Length: 388
Ligand SMILES: Cc1cc2nc3c(=O)[nH]c(=O)nc-3n(C[C@H](O)[C@H](O)[C@H](O)COP(=O)(O)OP(=O)(O)OC[C@H]3O[C@@H](n4cnc5c(N)ncnc54)[C@H](O)[C@@H]3O)c2cc1C
Image (tube, rainbow, N blue to C red; front, side, top):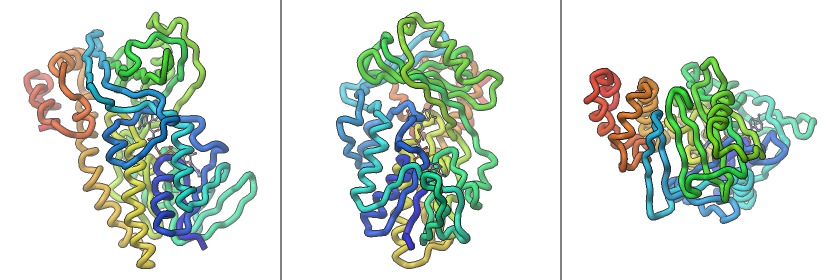
């Protein structure tokens, strides 16, 4: 019998697997795709503060471009330039980054298997049924950790995902483009407004010389698709006229519905599978890896005590909510407020926030400052109160 089966070899699954294998546990990670990390479903942005906080030593070959700031465009075309003299983030190559994460887990002693789809849970979550290159078998384990991303069906087979009725899912679409004119190779470009991306934004994440991930994330329940808005943005911009599309990516982003409970008897969920994503920008690499680290600490203790009941694993809920959940909940509130704003309001905010560190807001910090700004606009008073 294995100690732990991890379902999914994304950043969250590989993070939890590495930590548990380092503690000496017998861990196997099953990944349904034939190649870990491909195709990517990601703009590939990761902040330097996240890299530091997670203690990651990401090799050079996974880091495509360093970022020193951003150009943020309001609906009327005005831009706010955010600049730092230091590197504030990276655009990664997820195909190599995810494989590197899997390699770390394997080097720590975990067994990683691609083209292995988990199709069911065994009774009491004491293992899984896995289909490896067409052949089904039962694998017994003391615990199962679901890290299957936004589409995780395994988490939905437990009480954990039953609670996700309130889940808010954005729709993402992206082209990796070459031969385009970049405004600044070291800055993210972000575009807001009802015309460009209703209840969301368009991004241009530079990935090297004349190369970028050009994508969009918008609410999943609009009449038109994310692709429709992205194509229109590209068609209306002369600087894409000579560009080519070398990769198409799409995916869903859980930008709400943080789960109060992420455990069951002998079972935990981490990463997108537990809706652990930053609700304002949809970034989930950091959240997945962090959750993996927290979950491994709790799982390790539970396995040592030979008590992997829900009651014992609930410590993970408490720890995650203290470390990440509370600030992400504030960010969720900010997203709700921003969704209430029209283009005129956004133009006003962009003007007022010129020169400020907008990254703080995405981490749930200094939100009362935003609230106070909104209070000055009578029609925004109701929204403003949510942030004060
Ligand atoms: C368009 C788009 C752009 C994004 N841009 C960014 C960004 O710039 N920065 C950022 O931080 N985040 C971004 N995200 C979000 C980010 O990609 C995810 O939050 C992150 O990958 C979550 O990691 P994870 O390990 O939880 O899940 P995933 O990375 O989705 O990994 C889950 C893995 O589990 C596998 N799996 C699923 N079910 C099974 C099964 N039954 N058996 C075996 N394997 C299974 C899947 O194949 C997958 O490989 C973006 C998302 C989208 C859609």
